[in-house]
Length: 283
Image (tube, rainbow, N blue to C red; front, side, top):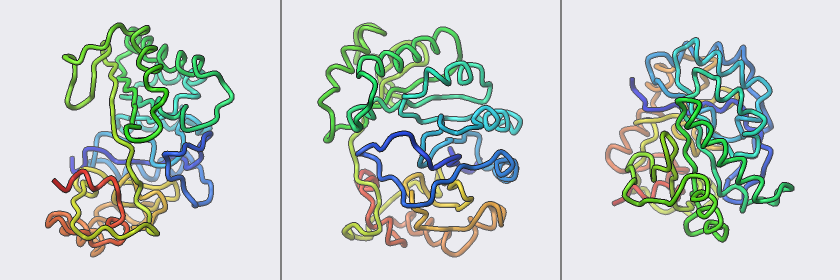
């Protein structure tokens, strides 16, 4: 397999507006099941894992069940990243899906929004989901607190609630790949707040390394292929999966220049020179 993961944006529509999320100026769009049926055969042999996310909240998709069924038919494993607000409504579907491999739940979403539901109710729903998933399924659940250096005033309350559901946090149970193990297949993952790439941001220089096109790529809801999961506006258009096969897109001059540039720790694209996330790879 060429890529560890491919980000497939099944919808760029979200039910929240998180302050830490760049958002998108693109028109709202929901991918159809028929479009997915065109895409999936073109991804065979390139990856085993599909993230149903780039922008948008995947649990908002009106045909999520159909998308999971199509992924299962294609022998793909699906990872979903969610803000957690719809887990209660979608729990039965998520638990029963054979294609679903992992659910990432961004617990820092509550503090970054003005939600109508009480904090305790939101948190209990998210944490109960993980506890039940551990007992009833083979799914991996990862709780994310990617807000270090940002909105983290509620982290103490969140950690206390986690301990009430899963027991005292044990730093010796830390897994480098998945974070702090809470129970079977349930983890807590910390991360730093970062600045999304923005073509209008200040140029920070061309000394950049990134795993875009190396272990991942992204496909926007209109079929636009981009090099990574952070190109939320489609600024680096490499081609369109509805119009070309992936091999042709990846062998284009723009794609090969980008890949070779990163091999030499140089950014060939203006957007990559303005990416806060890529700074962590400079060392």
